Length: 57
Image 1 (cartoon, rainbow, N blue to C red):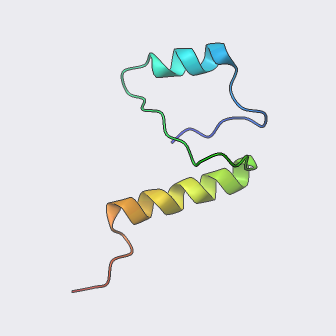
Image 2 (image 1 turned 90 degrees about the vertical axis):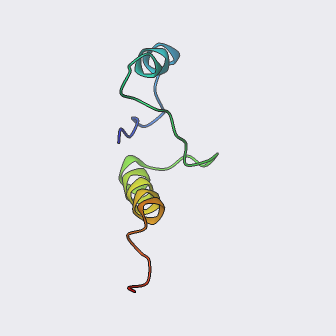
C-alpha cells in the first residue's frame, strides 16, 4: 500500500506509478484525508476485503 503525500502525487508521479507492473491504483473516494488517517482507512478496507472481520464459524 502506498499512501500519497499531502496535496497528492503530481501527474508525472501518478503516471510513473501506474506504469509499474506491481501497482494497481485504488482510491478511498473523493475525500482528502491526512496521510495518517488515509493509512488507517486503507488498512481497514483491506482487512474487511480479505475477510479478517468475519464472524468465527
